[in-house]
Amino acid sequence: MKRIIIDREQCDGCLNCNVACISAHQEGSNFYTVNLGSADSQSRNFIKFDPKTGYTPIFCRHCDEPECVLSCMSGAMQKDPVSGHVSYDEAKCAACYMCVMNCPFGVLTPDRQTRTKVIRCDFCEDQPDGPSCVRACPKQAIEVKEVSR
Amino acid sequence: MKIIIIGASAAGISAARTIKEVEPNTQVTVISRDDCVHSRCMLHHFLGHERDEAGISFVDGHFFADNHITWLKNTAVVGLNTAAKAVTTDDGQELFFDKLLIATGASYFVPPIPGLREATNVYGFRDLKDARLLDAECETAKNAVVIGAGLVGMDAASALLKRGLKVTVIEMMDHTLGLQLDEKSARPYQQHFAAHGADFLLSEKVVAVDLDETGRGVTIQLASGKSIPADVIVIAAGVRPSFDFLDKTGIATEKAILVGDDLQTNVADIYAAGDVTGLSGIWPNAMKQGRIAAINMLGERLLYNDRFAIKNTVNFYGLTTLSLGNINPQPEENFDVIVREDHSSYRKIIMKDGHISGVIIQGDIGGTGFLQHLIKQQIDLSGLDKDVCDLEYSDFYAVDPENGEYHYAV
Ligand SMILES: Cc1cc2nc3c(=O)[nH]c(=O)nc-3n(C[C@H](O)[C@H](O)[C@H](O)COP(=O)(O)OP(=O)(O)OC[C@H]3O[C@@H](n4cnc5c(N)ncnc54)[C@H](O)[C@@H]3O)c2cc1C
Image 1 (tube, chains in turn cyan, green):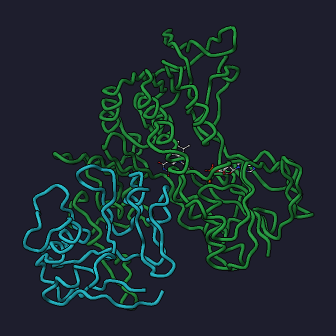
Image 2 (cartoon, chains in turn cyan, green):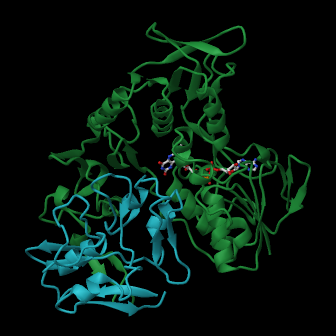
Image 3 (cartoon, helix red, strand yellow):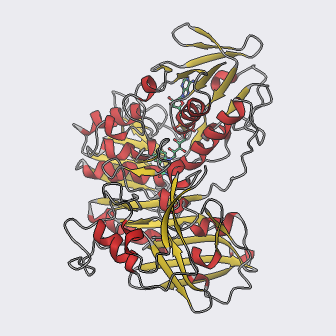
């Protein structure tokens, strides 16, 4: 399957991946017009900073054994047997947030504005050029790699 | 190989799906009393008329056909012959198996309170069948009484409020959601429910239900002397593992079906998963047990190790809470209780000797999933010079260089 791989050593915390992610999920916006102040602007990837360890990129792994899928009681999250990615059907989701509770890496989060859905990486499935975070990284620290399952 | 699965809910469906994923040629028959696959965690959305029956299914409509699984719905297993390896059903069929999975879940319990068991308008809230009966009552009822303010009772109450009934919730503890919340985090929920028309009678006990001449319970009598009028009564006072067809089969049971780490019962080739095992009473664990039992039935060996089962999330009226582990420690247990509050959340972390044993986070619960891992693995935090409320997964970050999966550096 394809997984987003980030070279932590390369990351200088510029957050372009965050902005690109928000923009990719904000209808009709681009890097210049994206509204970062609006309540629905939530990135699906995270860069954490710690003075001792520096920048740590936390991106959804679309895990081999996804705890989010096993905890999903509505059937909204499914592991696609072909792509290996975890799909999410917002209409099916009942916002119980057991997936947020069960994600061992703290990647999943409720939507801030309505608390009716989950904010999660969709691998930019509707974008022809693949994940927006990859394209946005000026250090080319983010790439999509084929990994074995 | 022929596998029979009894139960078409979290554990049963997860097992069926896994079997077909791993060994598509296995012959699988699922037998369920349910006539419609549904998620019990969404029953309140059905009763509240936010979703229809299809809307509370957790599989798509073609699941059984697409996966070539035979589904005998609306059918109850009434007997099991372990020597002949056959189950019998309430419509007189005898079905043979090589391996059997019992995933019959739990049933609600009606306490032996005078009048409560006899009253004809008392309903549990476990199956779609219960929700359909309540739905019909809602057409005419005005006053609903919910006995028990756990998650199930609160789910039911929220739906009855949506339907415009006057709802009174009676609870023995001094606050609602007592297994998940402390008094402080329960209060905002009680306020939300009250704002939508609910009354809470806390630290109260039902002592009797008075029946009218038709056998319907019309008045609830409380230990305090109060009495409450009722048109419809929901009992949400707990559940019991459900396995009455196992009488005299030799399968070892106590309050639940006893299983080993491989989820096999004491009888070879017969497995159990989900609420019926008493190992857990929550959806994620039932799913995982179903998956593990399936893999073991197919001849691999996978053990059920992820036993942490005191965990839940609550979301009513857009107020979200995460609850993990022991959240109401007794003073004599000598825990450290760390509380932090700000404009967006209330956090309470219960610790001893650098190990977390309980967590409540109310408000912003984003990214908090790693906390469960810290409790489950009993990760020692005493060496970290960071406030426990500020911890994140990134403090334990480690990556598998081969496949890019994350794990914990400890
Ligand atoms: C209202 C409500 C809200 C809940 N909310 C949450 C929540 O927010 N989070 C959470 O984690 N958990 C929640 N739960 C608990 C969760 O639903 C259960 O843990 C889960 O459903 C257990 O799955 P199971 O497969 O073990 O059994 P069950 O869901 O109990 O299903 C049992 C299956 O077996 C069938 N069956 C039983 N006996 C027979 C028989 N003799 N013959 C044939 N078929 C039979 C039934 O028809 C059914 O298909 C909730 C439960 C309820 C009732």
